[in-house]
Image (spheres, helix red, strand yellow):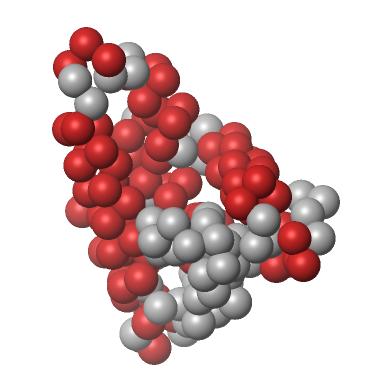
Length: 164
C-alpha cells in the first residue's frame, strides 16, 4: 500500500521496496538488504513476514480481527501491538478485538501518559500510523475486491489467507 507499487520506494523509517520491508526483517528471512529493490526478493520477505505474523496472532479468534492485528504488526511491529493489547486490557477493553478497542490504544502510544504506563514494555510509537495503515490497506483491498465480478471472488477462507 505505502510503496504505491514502486519497487525502489523507501520510507522515512527505512522500509524498502514494494512491501516496505525493514532491512532487519529481510535479513531475518534470509534476504540480503541490497536485494530489497528486487520485487521478487521483497515479496518473498514480505510474504514470509506476513505468514509469521499470521501464526503469531492465531490466538485472536475472529479472522477479520486477526487480519487487523497482522496488518498493524506489519506496520509498527508486534511488540507495540502487544503493548496496545495490554493497555486495552488494563482499561477494560477487549484485547482480542482490534476495531474500537486495541486500535484506540495503539493511537495512545504517542501520549506519554500511555507509553510510560507500567504495562507498556516498548515505549513510544507513532500510533496514528498503524491505526490509519490498517484502515487504508483494508479500504484498498475492498476497492480491488469490488472490481472483481461476483462469481470470481475468492471464498471466505481464501480471503482471510490472502489479506493477512
